[in-house]
Length: 465
Image (cartoon, rainbow, N blue to C red):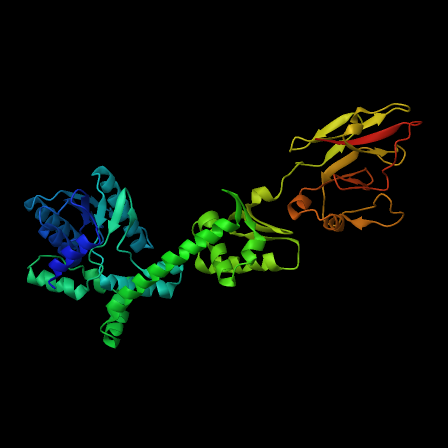
């Protein structure tokens, strides 16, 4: 079938656009984009939407000035709306110029779509571009979705980005141009091997075509089949992810560990990857992501009931018995105290969560209004003031009320009490001026804790909500 007839049939069958839409065609002046422009011009009036041309002069070659003039004149003669922008040479970066040029180009296209209320941007990517793109992504590595290569259409700017020539080989485009006597410019840099794509285009792709002359069709089918499989797989992954996400905030996610680990290992990995990509990071190098997924699963299935894993970007994975969390570092530890604080009789020390700790002297035969709060009684002769309230430190030990001899590590006490790891890191202790820990706040009192004796003056240490 002649290329134009097949092109028109394909556009109508796949509803790439409607006559009421508004198209912008990205035209460089090369053979691909000039063929695309000609094909659109040949669409019957009843089917052809409004269209205009967008062009970027990258100022990377001397010939680009002549190309821009040629294209502008062609559009003037044929009364096609024409919009262009120059990428000034003093804006060019010293490295990464291919990516920078693309970013400049597509930013301009977005602006023109909005300014002209365009619904579609058309580019002239073809089957050879698809082959090169898939090869480069396979070699470079990345997410499986990227291995589908270039899509026929995707969301872009205020509408859609469409590639109507994606199923046609470069040689078909050249043949159409020759048959229809089209003028175009050949970019001389397309043969320079300093550019990554050119190396694939000039050296690798020709070898593959010699190996199998159907290779373009095979890569096209691979892209289509992989897209179909991923579409179905993503539906399952999204459904499973919704089952395991118990709580979802911008900086905190609770995962139902038992449900996740009940899935097949392949589903476990895909669900965790989906959550990390779509909730936590939004973009992440694939090798890093694979490592994080493996480490998080190790954390969930390990022998430690309370454990945590540092992740990039200030995130942590945290296991708390049967619970599992992904959370920002600033949620991991609450500094209830900025610094150590002294406690002297008759004063309160306020904590960051709105609670407070106070030390008060209670006379003989007197009652204390604070006995309704969490408290402990102290013998003034057994403690050396001032008392100090602080966050616990590694190696802290204390005696425990009821133990006649010996000390126990604070860490072990908290583990025995099954205190979650997050709360362990927030734990406060109160010691006297000699360093003896009197109270592991909320959890354990020391041997210095006594009963109320109404025949003598005592201290009451109060933790008040």
